[in-house]
Image (cartoon, rainbow, N blue to C red; front, side, top):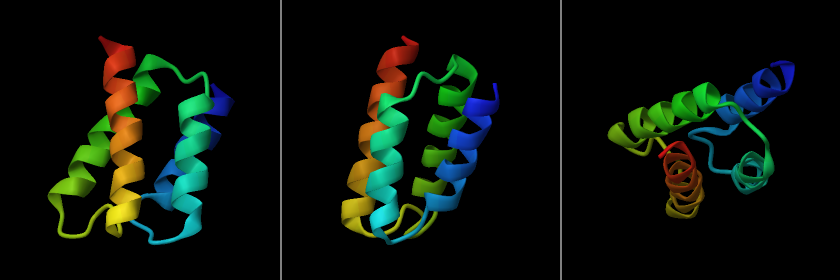
Length: 77
């Protein structure tokens, strides 16, 4: 559970930033063994951020977040 908390904190730090950290965090999220609950929360927060103007950062950052969202949705089905 503590691992999920650390990943979630890193995710929330990076979400919406326009920085190299987005790619690094996304890569780590995709490799992590996260619970379904954490994946659902991340998907929800990505969707909420996307609904805001520039909520996911620049285009390259948004691309990274969409990869995470797509994989987590696939994992959850």
